[in-house]
Image 1 (spheres, rainbow, N blue to C red):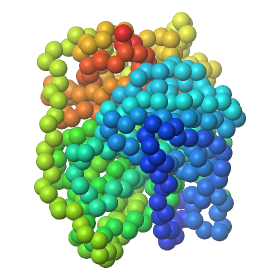
Image 2 (cartoon, rainbow, N blue to C red; image 1 turned 180 degrees about the horizontal axis):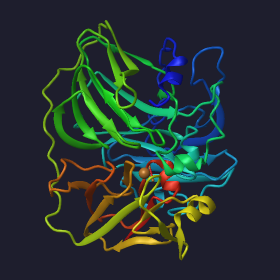
Image 3 (cartoon, helix red, strand yellow; image 1 turned 135 degrees about the vertical axis):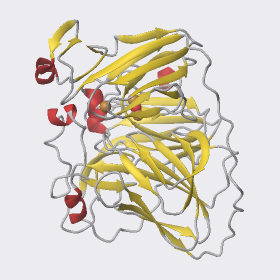
Image 4 (cartoon, helix red, strand yellow; image 1 turned 120 degrees about the vertical axis):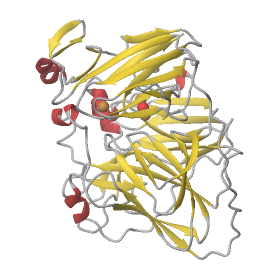
Length: 458
Ligand code: C2O
Ligand code: CU
C-alpha cells in the first residue's frame, strides 16, 4: 500500500472475529429492516485509538449479512436516520428497475427520517452486496454497505461458508475518519480515495475458526471506494464464481479484485492455518485474515470433485454497438468536454464543477442517455479506456460477457470489469431488463467526477 507504513504502525494482535449478525433467516416474505444511522465502530484496536465514527446499516459495519435462497423474495424496509438523503442499491442483482436503488435515477433519494420498501425476487444465486447509492463516494466510504448472499441447492456442500468483505479506510492519526480529504480534487482526478487502514468485515486481521480438513467456501467482496486488491490463498483453492456468476472451476491461489468485484473460492483445508494475504499493494504480502484450524469432532462433508458449470454462450451477432471512448483524469488527453450543453475546457470543468472524466467527449447526467436500446437486443459497449488510470466499469441490471481486443471472450459473465489503462474491450449483454440502467466506474470518485452514463432499455 502507498501508506503501508501507517498501515502496519497500528497493527497489533487481531481480535477474534465475532460472526456478523445474520438477519435474513426469518421467513423470506417478512420485511426486514435496514436502518442507516451514524454510530461508532472500533476499526483500529488499541486503547490509544478512538472508535471511528462511521455510518452504518443497523449499527454494524459491514451491515448485516443477508443470506437468502434463489427464488426467495427479499423485502427490506430501508429507514434513513442520516441527516442527508440516501438509498440502497443491490449490486449485481438483475433487479426490476424501480428497486435498483439509484437515487435520482430509479427513485428519489430517501429523505432524512424517510423510508422506502425494497421488494424483489432473487433469481440468481451468488455473492452480491448492497450499498448506498446516494453520494456513494462519501456514504460507502463511511461504511454503508453489507453482503447479500443468495444460496442455491446446487451449491457444492461445504463445512464453512465465510464472507470476507474487504475495505480500506482513510483514517486520521487518532483513527477517526479523515474528513478533510472528502471531495479532494486530487483523488477525483487520480486513483480515487485510497485508504490507509485495511479491514475485513470491519476488523483488522480477523481470525475465523475452521475445522481441520474441512471444506470452506470463501466469498471475497471488494467494498473499497477505489482500491484494487490482490488476494492470495496459500492452500488447495478453487475459483468457482466471479461477480456471483459461475466460471470454469480452476485451481488457483490468486485473484485480483477491482472495486465492487467478488470472487468465490472452495478451499480444502489440511491441518494448518491459512493466512489470506493481500498482495497487490505494497511489496510484501499483507495478512488480511486468518483461517485458524481447530480440531472439532463434527462430521465433515465429502469433498466431491467440483463439477464444471454449464456456461451461457455470448450472442453470435450484435444488434447495437455503443462506442465508448473514456478519457480524462490526471495526465490524460482530455482537453475539453461537453457539460450541461456547453463545451468547456478541462480546467474549468475541474475547478468549477469537479468534473474530470468524459465518455465520448461528454460528461453526462442522469437524464442524458448514452444509448436507447430495445428489449431483447444484443448490445456491445465498445470501451476504450484512453486514460492513464484503471477503471472498474459496472453495468446495472444485467450481466455481461467480456470480449477482448483480439475477439476472444472471457469465460463467464460479470457485472464489473476492471479495465487497465489503455485497454479496449467490449462488454456484451442481452438487453432483457427494461428500465434506465446506470453504467459507471465503481471507483466512486471517478463516477462522481463524470464517469457515468445511462442506458435505456425499452
Ligand atoms: Cu455497486 Cu452503481 O453500483
Ligand atoms: Cu474509474
